[in-house]
Length: 192
Image (cartoon, rainbow, N blue to C red):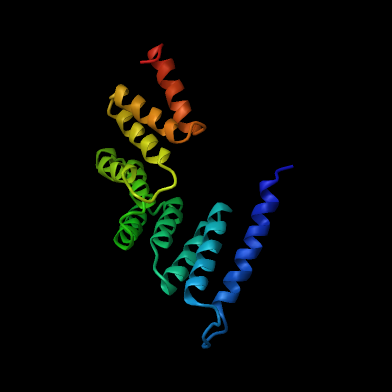
């Protein structure tokens, strides 16, 4: 039995009830402070995104931003938009996030990923480097790995390997970086 499914269901119900309370009645001011209302809507959007309900997540993130614009709101709105194939709009949302909080690393990495997905990997490099040097970022393995992807496409196997290894220094269990190194080893026949 998958234990994450009941947890997600419970989390969704809590987020849904908070978001419903955050709406209040039409034409009447909610008793819930704006910051909490915005967070409840953001949390609902996050759960909807994880559930694969991307358009509903977009709507919830937009409602959250309407109440209180945050870097997280714009970044996660961009993520959901990207899942719907709206990559340029996702980039625009990440730029808004950076304007609100230049120290937040997620939108820099996300712009890099969207540019890679748009077939513009060279343009992704400075964004990924900014993510790597961001002051506030939970997951430094992501931009290192994504920079490795760019270096691999460019044919710079040594630089790609270094990026994948740096990703693993931040998270030794990060499977994409580990698999990338295994593929490099298999292609070359031995570790560099």
